Length: 438
Image (cartoon, rainbow, N blue to C red; front, top):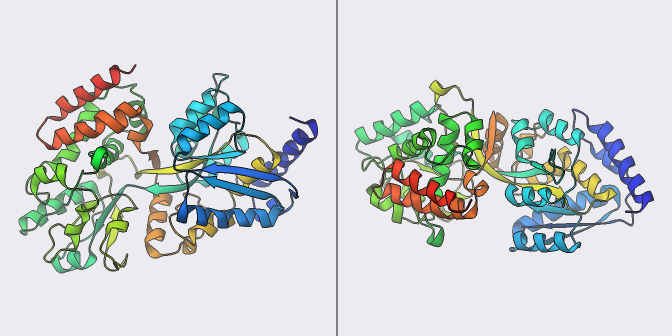
């Protein structure tokens, strides 16, 4: 790299690092940099609406700095970024939808460490900040662990959906603890209703919704360190602590009184159709646990906050493990270093970068500096609050596992489980599949 460019990167980094510290970089800091004539290339997974929304964030950066930003999205991002980085034609910044791929590229020396200042900033300014640092830190080709990515744009999975009018008519209150949720489940049955709709069907991916249940319970019956050891197989899949989490899911899904259609329907009902029971008259079920995207499959015209709403999938009061949140997110990593790339990472710290996308759709942030009123609607605001209240955040565990397990034997194992297999049998089979690829 040319020495003058390296000097520019260093100056930019020092300027913005001094501006950030424990507080976010401001737009004034970003505007103090003149990047006129520089082009920043960004490659990511976003197309259609997400791309349009991200381009509004990009426009803010371009206006502030004079840089020209070229974003390209692809539904084959995971394959293309490997090709581009290995060929020496990488974009300046790559947006990773899963940390595993970023970790792989970091181990080969294809990502640029973001430095201690960014790490400190995340710890100080993100709710459950250390969780986000851990998610974005990988072992480099030097054998040392560094922060290689900036987490920006999160998703929440620890949600239970319900119909407020149905709760009000029956006199039910939103549960605050897992103990309360189980008591409510039993109360609904006592009142003659069915508490849950659960569907695992998803074509070739059938079974994945159950993995989210198990992951949520792994965080509710075990410390987060156990979750981390589970996703890397440092503890085996058939460890008693994992079996206990699977059985917590079974408490809900395998009881014929608790779930619409009984356990047989759980394994065959498509996850997109599963929430329809909430809207039946009388209701076929009262609750449905699913991620923040599920309203896309609610009846047309459903108004969130009025016709349907959600609450945090609660933690056990007796376990004293805080408020863990399961979710997903995207990680911004520098794959071709430049002054503009360094500046853009710092730009993602600003409230303006976050609030621009918050005012649109499909964006959540754990950034504690933002104004929740900037969210486009009450539903996003509520999900954003769940992220801010989190004491621990963990990425979807099946996405962290090898594909043959996380997108293979774990899925099929969960279908076998609701079909009658024991948690031990299923866990043994999944561990055997993991051993086979080591």
